[in-house]
Length: 149
Image (cartoon, rainbow, N blue to C red; front, side, top):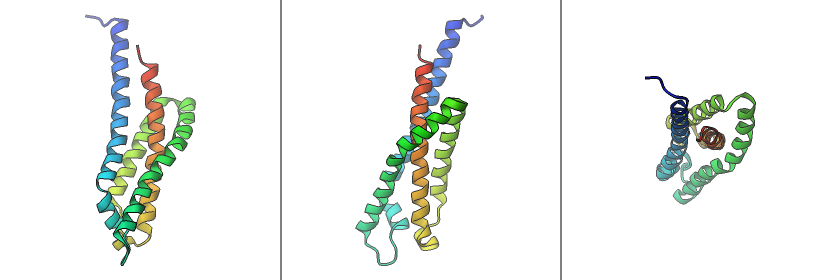
């Protein structure tokens, strides 16, 4: 049996919905994991010898918040790029960037190993995650809207 044009449109709409949802899930999963492990991250990355645990936790949450400040920058940067080269390649890029930054956070050396470089690297990767999250959300919403019935 041959698929009708309407059936093909429904399939494309569902694929766009799933693709946008998966990207959004990856983004918020990472933010949730970081918040859940904040006390461990504080102890491993932001507590120099003799440092306060409270100060380390504040720095950990400051790094967490930094990603939210980079979201509008990522939306503007990747939104413009998506308009120029296409939304699909940009969505693949930002999801890869988010996944790569999350993976690198998982293998970062701790303060004990890398010294003051460890919190700086963590903060840099959080900024990359914020950029990619901003680019992913706007692009995913645009794709889902374009393929909506």
